[in-house]
Length: 288
Length: 254
Image 1 (spheres, each protein chain N blue to C red):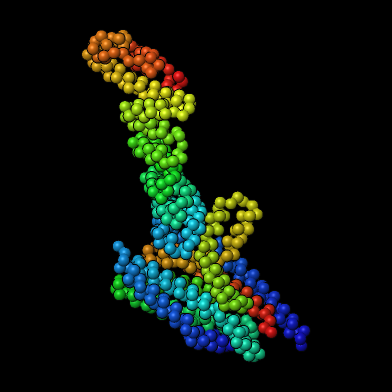
Image 2: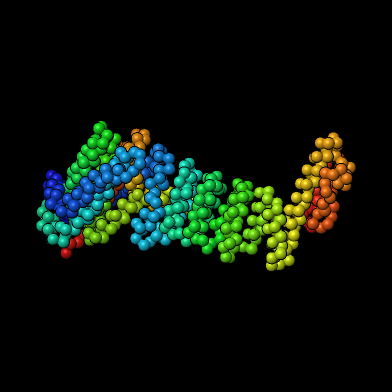
């Protein structure tokens, strides 16, 4: 009797195991099949309902730094998934949440700005992210430095770059080359007089010979740009009156178009080509 | 017949559980509070009512399934009534299935009541019957059925507190398992990727029952997914119940 009952129990257990294997195979196959069915999404739906970081911070029950880490890890995966077409729609919002959760976590500001510029092609979002980083961490120079770099290299907005580099150089610990980047931004925005004064100040306060040499080369470049500009104006006026280029630069002085022929910072003459009317420096400023 | 009797008793027992009414009260408050939340928004108020209403049905439904389901089998063992039951000509599988169906019936009644409040509130605002909401609610119910099976499985070998924790963890994993798909895409082919893929296939994917976004925004739902998701839920539930029966069969109560 007990043998019969035990063999019936064994058969039932065997059938149960078969049933488990069959149902497991079925649900796994269905999972693969269901994953293959494309479902429509609301644009940005994956992040559109993310609450503000200020609210979320209270909801993390004291684990806000951990929540920031997790949100950052998620953001990196999310923004490196090219199949999500609308992933950049709420870029600023996502990184603002991380900054609210852990304002001192500096990587998300830098990486968020990099994603905004390189991937989303949205420099304004990058500036918003970096400005937030600076606002929450006024003792860290990296955010204004990175913003200045984006303004200079990507936007070619030299006025904005100057503003950011000026902010950066005021922060203790900022690299010694930031004042030089600022001076270069001033030069490239076309304010030659201020650029001259800035480079002169760098030259005078240079801590070493290398910096002094760099400043000197830039001073040479600024002065030659100012001088060649003046010579160019005089040459144009001469050609308008006489219908030809002068034979040499002294002619401009004799005819009253120039008060005197300027010399470069090394007290050398500028090279003049009477065939084309071009004036230039004898040597490249960077090879002096 | 025996399963029906056990299911009937389980339903009556669940009806007397105060926690059921407490959760139903909070669910009703949540659904009605969506009207207040909608006042705070600028723009589409109906969307807020739909979102909060459907979320309340889903969240409180899951809490009902977990908090009642995890105690069902344990209570019988704790109060020693299991000895009386199993001394009768009743198979342990019938006991598990009866308990499961009794709780499913309870959840069906509760979901129907919550849905009625939600649809009535929606009707007051839109002056039309939003049939599409029933699709989302039906799949929420299917998810609750699966969660009930999970609760019964854990309840068959663990204490209610641990079972509740395990079941809620299962629920969370079910809604976050898509993260593994992202990891799979980033991994190089090899053993690690195969293992993660196997894990991803075995773990529950409760997002298959989530049609809330589609119905609220009126997005088209591919017809193939209805059947696929339904069968997925049925087979996963059957698997969990089979596992619960297997565990419960081997359990020694002395």
